[in-house]
Image 1 (cartoon, rainbow, N blue to C red):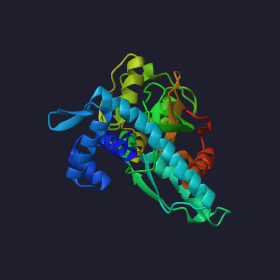
Image 2: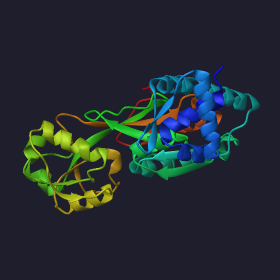
Image 3: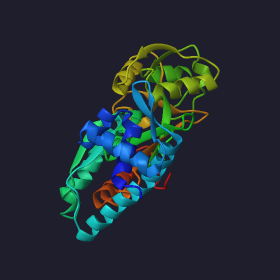
Length: 316
């Protein structure tokens, strides 16, 4: 019979790729992990990992076992959550990884909702926040370094989520073209009027850095409009991009929530709309933890209060 503890070790090896890294994450010694791995292979009757240079990779048998492990360990997490709910308790700390604009706009509302909650026990909910890009946040979730990841995808740049996780839509955030008000007036664009990107093929562009998904979104949007943007400024700080656009340095595309409140810009939705969808991502089984369930509910409430956004509580 397969041992659940060994399946957990294999699951960690699938993520961390080496015995040493998996052992550190599990707070075990490397020899102990190797011993348990050897026992698992005896139980399975075939190898579950193989060498791949300096790392390990799963064999077909290992991949099969990890798929089952995700379900089994998710069910165990759900059972633990149900017991916690039955006892009426909540765990003391939830680790959240969020991209910057959600950390700046959504999370302050979440903290406020916790502090003002009518349930005294709910007010004891402790949230530890780390700002990370979605790819890093989802990787941290897989490594069990965080409990809830806030991630996003664009309509023209969809995202794949791990099979071992559950993702739910929080809200839709429109992408807007940012112009200096005088520039918009010269083009005959009233505030809030839709803009055709083809009219901006010769403009200087301000974008985030190439390693961000927003940069990829801009490249795709401009490519669909038939041009490659002439990038003059790169910054991962949307406040910088907004300030420089307001100073007449060029034009920018940005999700509405990413922009500071007092931006001094003329904002325009696109003729061919682009939307950024915000998600909560959690490991399978943990959605029934009372504290995680409460936090996700508060995140939905916070999302519904954000101005200029479309809230959607439907499951992804």
